[in-house]
Length: 285
Image (spheres, rainbow, N blue to C red):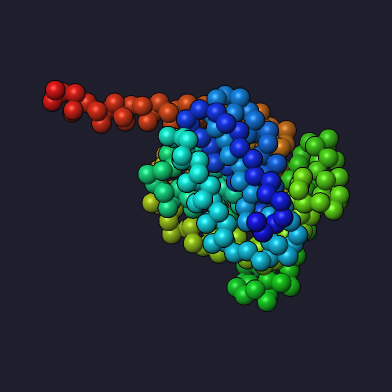
């Protein structure tokens, strides 16, 4: 696998499964708390390593957004073997990837949970040249840019932030991902988003969006845009005491509880729908 050792992990549970994707230049471990909490509630959770990640910058630059989507499709097929109901989701770029899967698999994916979805890098801590990057369309030009993580590194909790900084500076991308996202990878994110936008209205699955009000990487306008454009019911939860890394930061417990409540609602709606579908055959008997 491109990106070195595969750091994907899966927690076995019941027939309801979550497929959760990490962010750009990130790692499946950034979803560990959420995955364990959902698994503790009885759900199967799979957090795959996206192609090109958990390795070097060159590993990431060698992949395209289609590779990320293809890997997501493979993970979905595998999870479907043991789960009847599947909820796809993820954090940051992983949320965008999850939405792609939902658009392409309306009969397989029943719902979405999107955590700090990132369509645009427009938070308050992004470097000034991020705005210029909107004009970039070619690899050679993208290679002139690097997006290095800046304080507060997506974390408001000082204790967790200190741990993250230590992991980022360790020289290994396994724990916390890369300190710097190459411009070519950010260009691929732009292409992923461009291909998703025309499909948003066709995504009818119910969706939970959890986004921080003071997101330092991708402002809350990302969540509001999706809320307007998605074709199905959308529940939005705005967090008021954390930054971009919502699955790690101070209100991760709130995120988990809202996700559990949303999942319970989805399962009740599916049960009602299935009962309605079965009624005509029962009456005919």
